[in-house]
Amino acid sequence: MAGIDLHTHSTASDGTDSPAELVGKAAQLQLGTLALTDHDTLDGLDEAEEAATTHGIRFIRGCELAVAYGGDELHLLAYWVPRASSALDAFIAGQHQRRRQRNQDMVARLVELGLDICMEDVVAVAGQGTVGRPHIAVVLKEKGYVATTTEAFERYIGRRGCAFVPRDLCSPQEGLSLMAGEGATMVLAHPCLSLDAPRSGWDALLRDLCRWGLSGIEAYHSAHSHTSVRLCVELAARHNLVLTGGSDYHGAAKPGVRLGVGSVNMRLHNLLLEKLQARRLSDGLPL
Ligand code: AMP
Ligand code: FE
Ligand code: FE
Ligand code: ZN
Image (cartoon, rainbow, N blue to C red; front, side, top):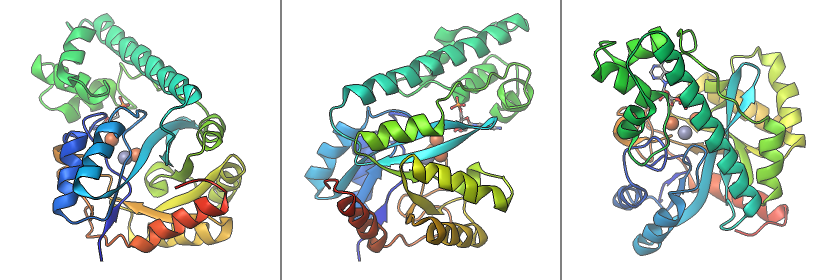
């Protein structure tokens, strides 16, 4: 039975395989279906889709969207993202503008602290992918301000670092309504990685997310323990959510996570995909 992977990243965001390389690897592993879900961008989808056609793999156009949740962020996976949507393009452009501003604000704080760093240094490290804190960390290391990128996060740009600026994200309602309104099927990504809320808080959150257009919950994920999976299964049953799964493969950026199986040897069954497709059809949406 051909496996599936519904959560992967390419060089279009913070993965290290190009979209076409990623699809090539999925073909080698004989995966039947692959979704590319780069962070806050649709840039890799056309290339991946073309490669998938060449390799005879079913491809789902996806995206992993970050939205604000308390002082933290939630990740939402969007599947069957439309090919052309001006509303979606404008939304993604807004996310990028806010991200650029945030990077600039963090670099400005570092300069205020007396460090010699500028945005050009950071952009040079990032290459073509989305620019973010990992690239600032590399610059700080290359310039000798820290010994490791981990230290860069601890001292400067991590949540408790002195140059940290939180991301300016849209609300879950805004993200879900827009994406679902444009015809995407929305899934809460790795909830047990994002949420340390007490158990009682989850039902209230999921009720809201469902009202705004959530259809599924990612129960099977590289970072989910058996207990997390069980909790997701219970929540899915209570809130009529479809269960999904994916590795969250990032290539060499997350060496312990393998395409198709993640870090815990998951077997992602095609049945998950069939249920997701059935949900779409029952919502009157095309596959
Ligand atoms: P950004 O999207 O710019 O906020 O950067 C987020 C990325 O930074 C995450 O995907 C991680 O890869 C990385 N990151 C976040 N916190 C840490 C940390 N404490 N140590 C190392 N990497 C981190
Ligand atoms: Fe990532
Ligand atoms: Fe994520
Ligand atoms: Zn991811």
